[in-house]
Amino acid sequence: MTISRLTNWFGGKYDDDRLLAIVRHAIDADPLIAEPATLTVTVKKGVITIDGVVHRAAEKDRIEGVVRNALRTIGIKFDRVVNDLRMVNQPQPR
Image (cartoon, rainbow, N blue to C red; front, top):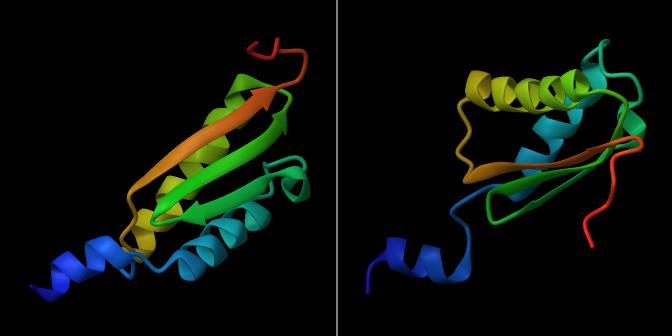
C-alpha cells in the first residue's frame, strides 16, 4: 500500500487549518467586504465552504473571488470552494 493511498483514506492531503487561516485573513483584510465577521468559513478535507448573508450578488461574487485569488497567490492545494452565501431577502430553499 502506498503512502498516497493511505493519505486519501485517512486525510493529510490538505492542510485544512492553514487553508482556514488564509481564507479568513483574505476575507477580513478586504476593505470592500462590508461585514466580514458575519461570514462563516469552514474547511474539511480541502473543501472550503463560505456561508453567511450578503446584500448584493456582486458582494457574493467578490468574496469568492478574493478567496480564490488568495489561494492561487499562495499556491496552497485545496479541493474546491463552495459558495453558500445568500443574499438578503432571497427566498430560502424548502
